Length: 93
Image 1 (cartoon, rainbow, N blue to C red):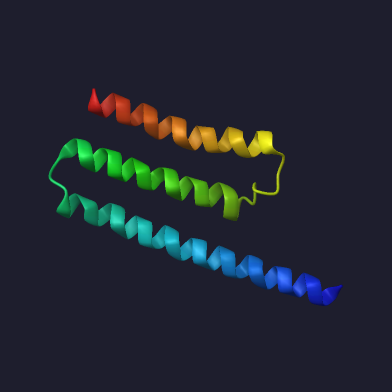
Image 2 (image 1 turned 60 degrees about the vertical axis):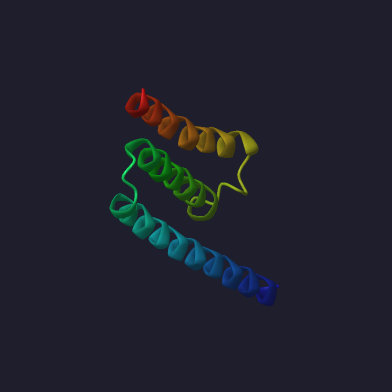
């Protein structure tokens, strides 16, 4: 029983580490986008897309809501999609 738990802990730590590295990389990409993209609309859509991906990682990996009841997970994921969408509409219209 302890061996199974230690293997699961190892997998969880590796997943969290990989997710953390992805979050760091996406943050760097979001910052560098300002240097490479001159089109304001494209920059806003790109940056908010990165926000959605980062939010999904936080909800599923760090908050571990992929194990939670589906309603809670979908509520938080819909929030992560809805808020950037509203922000995009405000800035692009």
